[in-house]
Length: 106
Image (cartoon, rainbow, N blue to C red; front, side, top):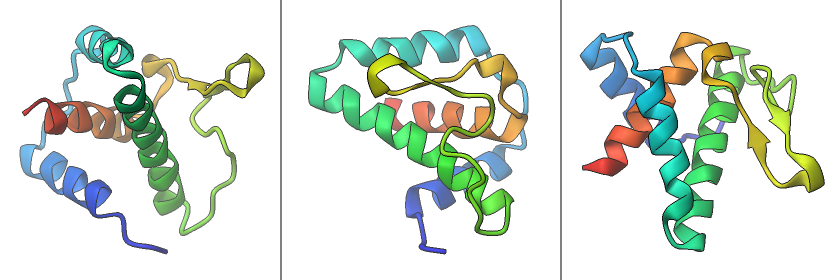
């Protein structure tokens, strides 16, 4: 499997913190606020978040991706992205998203 330095760094930070409580409401507000960045920056963040979720799913399944939209994600009409319900995500993907948002808010 190809290395993904950002994923590895986020996992390292998550393991270092050993914190599982995430304010899902704040996380959702932050994700939604990405839409107010310029179009290119917004797209890059959303794509990176999706790639992190796909990579994590692949890592967890020994290099196999069983679905293009893991963790009960829904493809938006017109193939305009993927929608996830944070409450339905397992703990680790939530932690990865939250850590990504913290990482880029510094």
